[in-house]
Image (cartoon, rainbow, N blue to C red; front, side, top):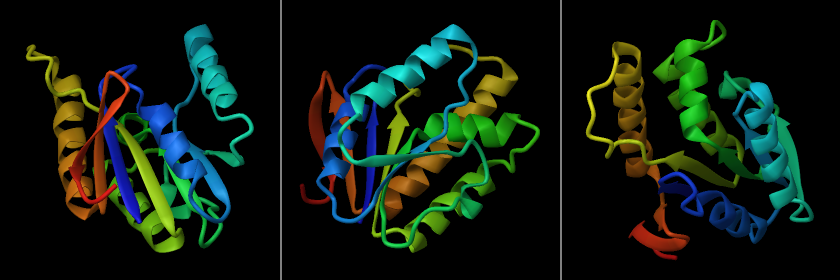
Length: 169
């Protein structure tokens, strides 16, 4: 099963996705894509680790190249999050661009029994952006459209409340 969880900042996406995946069978893998920079980044990582403590997740930190991630076959994977992964693939020296994101997701879909991807809704700002930011937003939107088309279940979180956009809950 492939689930896409979207929503704005602090909408409850992570909490909902962790609870959802913690009910899935098999080995649970938390696939962390955020490279922590500075105190704020490390604080955020610590918060997420504490939040999923006791839920049976093994954490795998992977910032690029998901197509070669050592994910156990048949596992239930929570990828947190798509925006970080896309930024890493687009802007880091190790990154392979948008196609690397999509190839990595395809690999995970073949490898695991359940894949849940957390994605930030960043598209309603309505502002003029610099070239790199605009490129990032356009590529991320493209990835969102492709993944929503493939997903069995698409859930949007607003104020902590899940709204089913596709599939059956």
